Length: 282
Length: 223
Image (tube, rainbow over all chains, first blue to last red; front, side, top):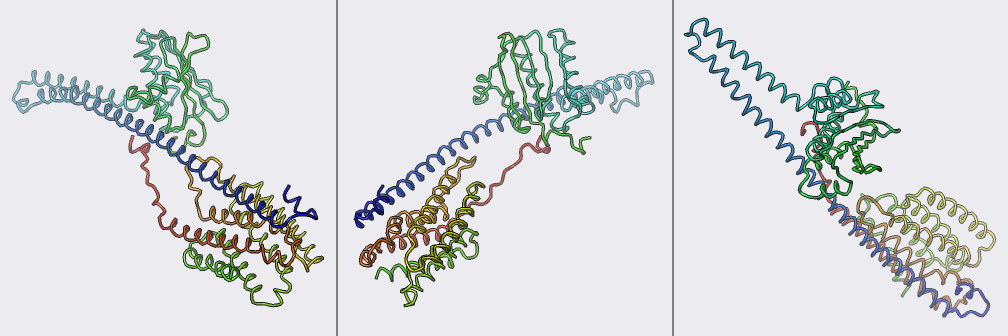
């Protein structure tokens, strides 16, 4: 308006300049102050978010370290408590007096030592299989999951089944192992806490996304429970799942089925470059 | 006196740029440095040449065209959005074409209309830059950079002289002498802020934190 008045024949130069310049300056200063305050607020908010994310990562890292330590302790205990005494017994059978014994006793000692060494081999094989299941290594995720579910079903305590709908090519070996560990952890939780009578796993893909869905009819978690447990100090297994999913850049959803009878756990992964099989893994 | 201070202040950004920024300056700072040099040359030219003083309206008109060209390029470099970049190109080309036409036809008096349009274009570009910097990003970004200070300096200068420019060709010589101080003060303030921006550039480069080193806990060796 003032600008329009400026071009009218009877305008007052000093008034127009005074109000115009002061007005524009006030607007500019107001804008600068607004930007400064807004930016400071944004930075504070982002820093808070970053801190929260760092805390979350710290919790996940601690959980993964604790889990690794527990795994090492379990292997150490297996080796120390089972393999150690077995090998010591075998050594007893083959001690230095062995040559002084009569042939019949020598043969018996050799037989006993052989039996013990066979048991030790089996024990070490079991430990090794628990670290890297051979079915997973040789035949892929589908076979390993089917194998796991057959074992659960075979125990007779629960009805377990799995079905892979779209698994034509294998994923990277290390990613398959991570997915398998997540499934193992989830199944382990269901077995331990849910009191379910059946578990059913399905695999599917949709575009670039790779889905694994687990249904069971026991007591389960909802997404809110999962997030709450993820932030607390308990729920080591769930934190481990979170950290493994982070490696795969995947997501997990816990929900109660529409019918309110089943619990669903959906693992969603982006099937891009990192999930595709590499030449080295083939 | 005011003119002398204004001339001296025009030297400040050039001196600080040469001392603090010459080696590491980014392209946009170099462009603004060129703008500072052009401004100084025109100021000196108007101050020392009697011919230039007699034809000062033509000189101002020509300076206005150069100013919009260089500053549009400066904004073109600092704004990331493609649409705005295209708009900057279009507006500056159209502005230069129309200004040159006006310059050919009426070269003996100050072209307030085109200068006001130029100032409004620069104001809009400065606002676009601020909107661009205020967009949310994943990482916290410090917007208080030398470029931010330079844009603030430009904004203060343009907004405080907008009304003066708009009515210059309707002012008498006496009124111009009386009110031209606004432009002088605005330019002195801009030069001081730009000098501060160049000093800030030097210290921000100096105190840049070292790159963070992260450990990949997900590598196969750690598993």
